[in-house]
Length: 170
Image (cartoon, rainbow, N blue to C red):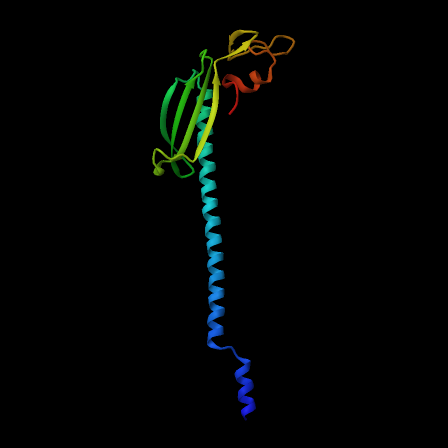
């Protein structure tokens, strides 16, 4: 009878062994939960950063497509996109010669405050191109001569045909 009791005692786990196993499993689960939480936070941050970049690019495109050249200086405003209100700040600096402008746009969620920026875009706007030392104004409505090659300012250069009035890209 003594032999049966001893073998039964050896076949089971002690309370300390069970507690040690539970602690190890609990620590492992905490690590998994922390990794999942970090992944969710990173995904949310990247989503916000992407949407803020879209807001900045849209604002830059609006400025470039405007009928008149942008005025130099600072401006700001709010816009709604993807269920969030975004605050943008734009600074326009005129280059020497008054033919090109640098446009810096910073965007952040409106709730983040005015000093925070999670996306920034820089672009350029040009009113003219330089050919052989002469400044030639952009022709907003170039006409094609009968042979089909582009005429007007810029000739057949790719920057004039693809860049339009905005000149160099961002």
